Image (cartoon, rainbow, N blue to C red; front, top):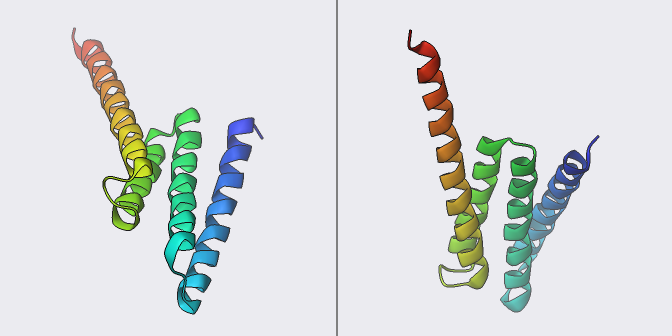
Length: 115
């Protein structure tokens, strides 16, 4: 297993554990700074999974996880939070790069079709 596959596996395990912890604490009442801290970690976990998928050239999954990071961050931290701004910028940049890759792939395919 390569380094990025291993990192992806570890990131997913961390995400599962974090989600379980947050669910249990939500049931038992989790408020204030601790909730913001755990939410920040959750957003970063989604972002890190996106990073590993991007390194593995699995761009669709990368965008999905980047988008989850943005959605959770907007919902739970707010649009003006520095983490939200950061993950939104990463998502926008990755989306732009994927769109360019898809356009270039389409252009190459069109050239092959011409007689």
